[in-house]
Image (cartoon, rainbow, N blue to C red; front, side):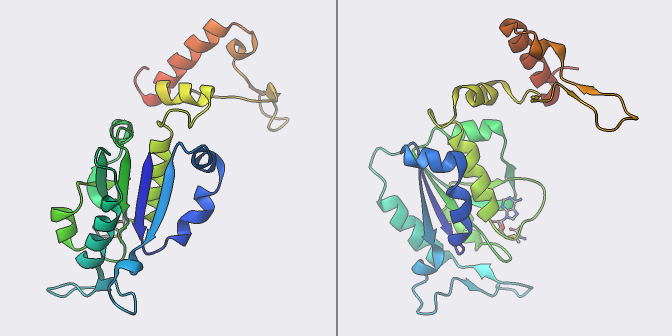
Length: 223
Ligand code: SAM
């Protein structure tokens, strides 16, 4: 699975991507993440990638030219049979959910365009991006955090990225988990907080059933 991220802040990704499961997945060559500096496609000696909006109004808009050149260069690197998808992050788009993540995990290469400022020239939406994605009903300052969210969420569905138990969670949904101590007393005046008995009795089938049931409850699928 290849991720190509077009951004004006490539360094913002480094520390996160160089940690934990994403680092391991990249080392095992299960995923490949490449950061592309949008300014390198500006065609301008000052690296200009934004300009004022036509019609007036506040803020700056990312220009179509640098994004078009960047995406063209990235797609030219794709092998003929690679399944690619170009995604633009937009707060007003369809919200990313698990079904969306599973669908995106079927592509070989995702090209992620991170917007900034007042947004992106609409011609990117019309002519370059295959789809727009939002990560939630709130406005962030840029598409960098949405890109990190998408890369991590999609990577979890790439075979081999997760361990056995984490994979189970990905399939069945999040169930409640506990660790030591078995009994925790937050304050002498309060009742102890105990780990559910089923988890400490060693009956693996009962544990699996309990996790499935509680996982569904958390997802709101069961009362
Ligand atoms: N009014 C602009 C709009 O609706 O696109 C707001 C632009 S926002 C300040 C700058 C960029 O951040 C957007 O172009 C988008 O790439 C990204 N962004 C902000 N919030 C987002 C969200 N909830 N989901 C996905 N991308 C988001």
